[in-house]
Image 1 (cartoon, rainbow, N blue to C red):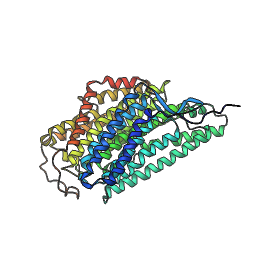
Image 2 (cartoon, rainbow, N blue to C red; image 1 turned 45 degrees about the vertical axis):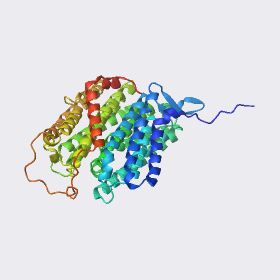
Image 3 (spheres, rainbow, N blue to C red; image 1 turned 120 degrees about the vertical axis):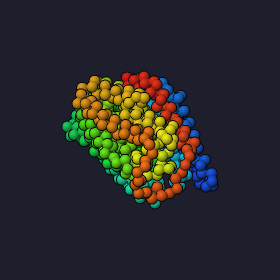
Image 4 (cartoon, one colour; image 1 turned 60 degrees about the horizontal axis):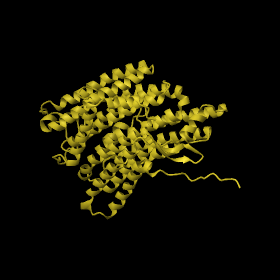
Length: 512
């Protein structure tokens, strides 16, 4: 009697613990919202924050393990979920970013009368999908994780009921993301038809020697469409048009969440499909991503430079365009990976830059949320004299902006930019390094301009006409969760600036 190959896959629950616990807490929050009276709804925020903190702590037992699960029984090295160093670093970034977002959200939910149960359920669900994505090693899981991270974000952007800006932002975000997903799914279907597999390792092997020229054409189309889909998700130009209006219309914590966690999701997926799924097409995606990087950083920085300080929401718009410019820097090492013999090593620079960017950008959004309590229109001109009113907040924001600019005392920003620049030069992309250097100089102007506003005297000229948001009574004081978020981001930025070798360790190591 012949033996039968078992079809049941083993499950490593410890490897799955971080995203699984986050999803479980989301369900607990949703159910608890049905039974808690209105006066006790704030407990949901603390429950969600605690859940994210515990999920992040569950990464510690996975350090150095290289665990994997959902593997094919006959091929234990072909798995759908892998908890390697790349996965753990991105999961730390995602869960840490979601934790800071939760701290920013606790009081804003009450101030803006947002539905607490729905808000926390959607935020945790999105974080669970974002934590699942870097561990995904097959195209089906990758797309599902991407949509689990994205779909709740649509609702979070439009959660301010009756707000025209919020509704328009959610609609624009939804339509652009759905178009990206449709394009990506078409690309994935082409790749499956050409290679007969969805696992990235098998797709990579099959793409190296397709016997039929028609299958090779189909696979090339699949690679191109998949990359276009991820270009939407990473807000790479010219697929960035949804970013400014979405950030302005969303609650400020969600804008910060999208700028950090949303980008981490897009870039980690892009790294996986290029480096692990399509290495044989490096001569195609390498130059394409290099052009996208140059275009993205230029469009983002030039648009940020043109922001009118007196325009309503100009501070958020500047941060939005700045995030587009930063996305261009993040694309540079991925593009360089297509030109070097060991592409897995190049992506360390992207991960290192992403860690720096996550801490200081969320910190900048935290200070913006603080200023919005008394200046709801959030103009850049509203930050004039912030040092006289709130010296610690002004110093923190100044530090964050200098980190983004790459100037001392923001040493971590300088080191991160140098590592990205070095990767481009080592890969022979001197033209891209020159464009990056020009863009860094452009960015210096608007970052320093905003920084100097913080320390100028209070505005004495006639103020612009108040918007409906500004006609509401301002909220004074600094809530403890918001102060904690600003303090955590500041401490993390200072710690990284004091130990820039951490950046070099990520930039020189092979995470995949």
